[in-house]
Image (cartoon, rainbow, N blue to C red):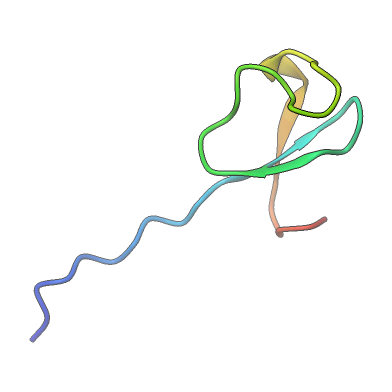
Length: 48
């Protein structure tokens, strides 16, 4: 039996302003266009 806990699934985000994709915790601002974090939406499949 393994003592390893299952890894949490990372959340994938996309900026609705420029389409920049981000994995993990939502950034405060988009690294590409500078839009606030409110511009990000969760995407169900990485890269889409």
